[in-house]
Image 1 (cartoon, rainbow, N blue to C red):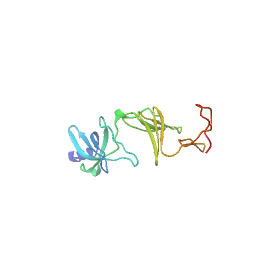
Image 2 (spheres, rainbow, N blue to C red; image 1 turned 30 degrees about the vertical axis):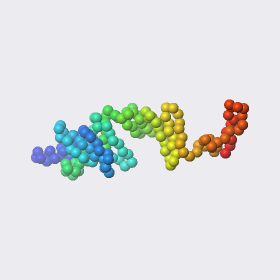
Image 3 (tube, rainbow, N blue to C red; image 1 turned 60 degrees about the vertical axis):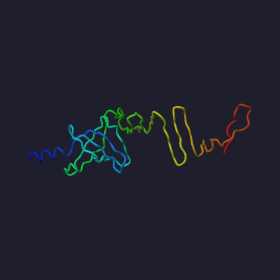
Image 4 (tube, rainbow, N blue to C red; image 1 turned 135 degrees about the horizontal axis):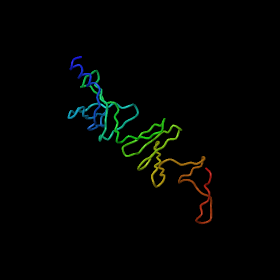
Length: 170
């Protein structure tokens, strides 16, 4: 095999270091260092359907594939950042995390664990539930327990002053 062919084959698949990521367009692109001092701009980053990420570039790595050996038609496979990797998952677990340590882990026993440094917000239609370090905050809609409305519209039976009675059934 001649040197030109060998160099072309070597350049088809290579490990790259991310320098910057642009997540504003239809396709995410990145500037990557393919070799010491050699940077390629606007290389498409392939992402799995239904999942998106914008990795911190400090230490982020990727695998770049030159489609058909054409360095001008390259794509970066999904990227990783070893310094921000969520590790120590049990066998069979699946997790999603960010560089701040917020995470969702689906455990093999059917438990789903959600951890957040700030708030967890669940939204559906015009209703939302925010879980913070201070408690739960509901907005929109009604709250029911065993079919009884327990939000701000429910009433209590009469009781001595200062002692609330039990909620009235709905």
